[in-house]
Length: 314
Image 1 (spheres, rainbow, N blue to C red):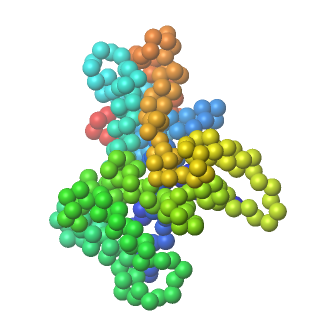
Image 2 (tube, helix red, strand yellow):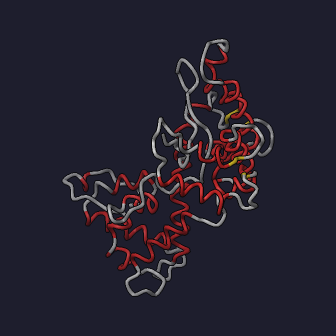
Image 3 (cartoon, rainbow, N blue to C red):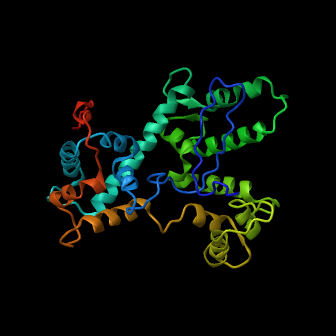
């Protein structure tokens, strides 16, 4: 059985339930540009979400080609920061990064009011704890298979790391770091700590090969091991365990879950540039981008596309 090791588990709200939310809080990798498969042979959905952000990509899905091009033209003018009539790879990368940040901030805004109980513009640890674990705190002796005491302790530890000034009161930026620690360098240590704690079954503070594979795959009966598992064993030996001592320490685990040498936004910018740069001069004109509008934003020919409410920027 395959476990969801390559997914990023985000915090969920436990409001009004009979017990705290049953959730996994471990962060495995940097927040992806899209949860969709990146396969241009099938569709450009990944590229749309990476370029526009997930929410705006859904809006474009219901627009006519003409309206998609009109809106994309306005976006191109915004991407071209130096106003030289070209879009460079760096400008594309910056735009994609900002689109993803906007998605994260919208996620935080969506949850903010659930936790800011007194509407004072900040969230204390007590407010977060009471909303998330209130029912458990009211009746901690209830039989349950979940160790909510441990979950609460882990959340408090992460909250304290996100809280830069140590007052146990989170402003928007600190709460964003708490919910999305993979995007904040000062949260790296706690992200690594959570990862090791979840995978390290023998409690030695490291992740060995058996634990690494066991977090992704559990054999059932006499099932033949999938080929990808053998590939992961090789990955562990050749790339994960850099000092060849048979296990991953904190630094090696950090390189695994938050690799410093790979930038999702940069990779996507290179991809969009390569696919659209007709004259191969290393930069894009508005015409080149509009000619490949289906790659950047997509659209569907619908009867109601033009009737959709338009955002102010369009």
